[in-house]
Image 1 (cartoon, protein in one colour):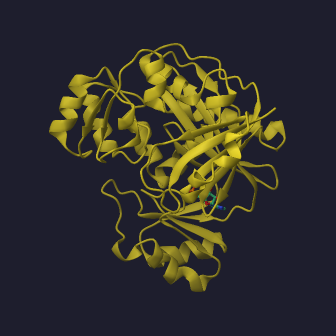
Image 2 (cartoon, protein in one colour; image 1 turned 135 degrees about the vertical axis):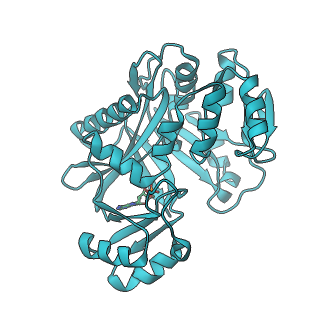
Length: 345
Ligand code: AMP
């Protein structure tokens, strides 16, 4: 989708990824299939392009740092490094005055016992790095669950990361009223533009639906938008930043995590906004002025997960339903195959 947006501006894209037959390769000008740690391939890639960006946050930060020595990388590797690590992310939010759920960093089962004692049950154990869609997470309902939870996230092999960061974090469970996310773009000139906040409904830890406008008071949405804009500015980020929040029953707005890239919860912008998140990202990374992200319709985005992709008839007859498929060959359970944006008209 990013490559398609780039093509609208007349840009050619060169994709580097380890997979064969990646969805982006179907629409990019050139694809290099290489490991993210292959420095020869990375150097050749950097020499062939004007600017590098990423749309997947588990590209190693060291890869982005390597590329930054050879060419322009937007957003910078530093933003990626913070977003890849839950402990760094939460520390960053605290530094800029944005609230998060209470949390502790930990490296051993004893640390976990102590943290559960401090935060109370229920609570959620998460690996600090490389988790997404609920992977690398275990909920702890009572102290008896501690050993199993530790095992479930691979605690047997736990050790601090090379930079001293903790292997895992424990978070207090937030009995939230709803989850929202905000996507902001920040240009090379420091101008920030925000898309409307999105209400997100997860099923089995995977985003199922995004509803816009979010069904909560606008004062809470303003807080979320302000926090996301502040985060992008403090990171000195050029590109997109998506921040996910819990809205508590008291109306507190707590940051959960962030990603310096286009976000699934922003896919509705493709059919309901003057400019969408991909076009806005292309503008930012190419150094163009940002466009107006104004929304012109209420909208619901439904992810097409696994077999959902075989039930498209219900959308084909609806003139307000816009189906986007990613061209993935095989529909596996839990795999995001596409999405549909349904405009409320
Ligand atoms: P995450 O990978 O951190 O986005 O977590 C995936 C989903 O699990 C979130 O979108 C929430 O629905 C749920 N979740 C994660 N952390 C917490 C928490 N501390 N309290 C309540 N629910 C959570």
